[in-house]
Amino acid sequence: MEISLRSNRLEGEIPAPAVAVAVAALPALHVMDFSHNGLWGTLPALPGAAFDHPSLEQLTLACDRLESVQGPWDGGLGSQLIALDLEHNCLGGLLPTFLGSMPRLSALSLEDNWFTGMIPTQYAVRAGGAVPFARLNLSENYLFGPIPSPIGGLMEGSAMVSLADNCLFRCPPEFFFSEGGRRKPPTTCREFNPVIP
Image (cartoon, rainbow, N blue to C red):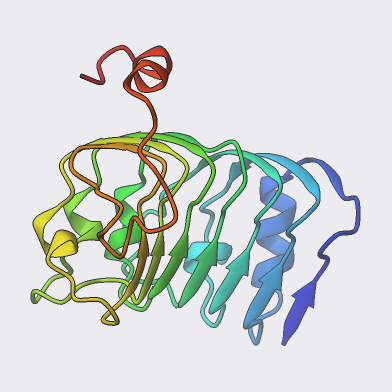
């Protein structure tokens, strides 16, 4: 089952309890797309909702105005999500570590948000040593620090990774995951977050 309300001019704060009840009442739901609307607030992590749904595999909330994401009670270990797209929102703070722990999640896009801090280890190495994501887009944020060595050591073609337009150290344009992008100027990075060197 698929629900798509893409580009429908939906506006307002996500009503967390109502959404959780509605989504939980659809046990065969596989795809949910609420992108290109005016939804804002927090993406909730309630029982039966997005991260805890028994069959939901693809969730798209791109081009809305979300401000935060709640971590599920089990740290994402019970999630069935394979693809999550939250690009072009107003999400800030540190990258949610639980997203890197979801066992089936292989495509994650957080492009063009306000995330800062370092890329968590969970985004670079999954339990057992495997690289977590086949597609990872963290471009156009304010991430800083070194690129985790498992990501830096990826061979071109092994995964689709974009880290361009951040505040990361040593992300030269010849690296395939920085192609077509640039590093934000140091002054821009420091204006956004004074702790960025």
